[in-house]
Image 1 (cartoon, rainbow, N blue to C red):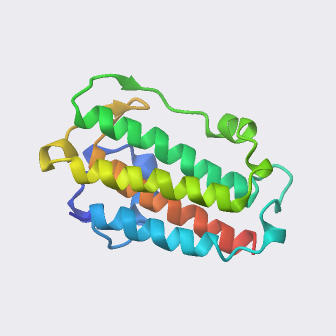
Image 2 (image 1 turned 180 degrees about the horizontal axis):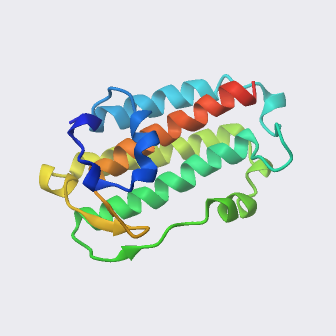
Length: 171
């Protein structure tokens, strides 16, 4: 299953750019392989860049990594609930408030990477447990349709988006 299998009715148009950035990876293998690529990239970032901000209002690299972790957790919870036919209407989440309160800069990069790896392993295992019917179930998040399989490609593309920003603006 690739992003080309998605119907636009499975996600909010806002997420189209992330889905496009997911590349040609398959859903289940893509979560694992993309996570491995992200970890390998994060491990190359010089120590003196980890708390750098290219503008005063922008996040540091450590805060971006925490944002990836937080976002993945939020979206995987949504995917789990939707796959289990929970009809809860999921509100949006305030990513900026999460970043303000996460205190990522007090943590080591190794600790953040280890957490990212743990969250990704959990996500991979969650998606391995889903049947095709579960992957195509539709729920409501942020007042729009959302399927678990869309969540996977949004997660991959979101991660790629932020890695590209780090490469272009922080290094």
